Length: 139
Image 1 (tube, rainbow, N blue to C red):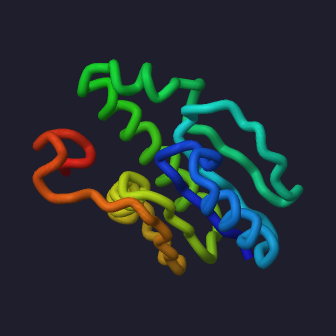
Image 2: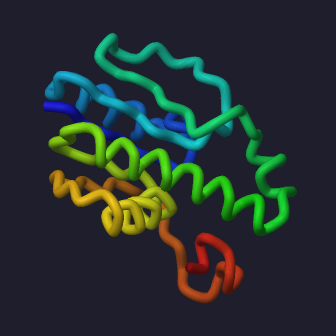
């Protein structure tokens, strides 16, 4: 079985994501990890884990400084990569690690037509009214 893990952050930015990827690798033939490329990889993953960054390295500081349209372009590119993956590969399970990855997945399902099992695993809470109205978190 092929598993896809998606995170709109770097997978090494939160310890439980690393643990979850290792557990998924233990029970899957292949684990592809699609992630926002915001840090360098330092962790050693099992051999059946493929890391798929969404583009060139952009630090969180650089990302926060970008105008809103650039942030939406990054989100669009991430979602487009996810749609392509869902259309071209047989995926049994998708593990989603944060709210923006879940939002991206909700858009991807509208265009992909794939119906795998979804596991949403997140500790962070986004409170209503604390995000800017037209930001990705606000949407």
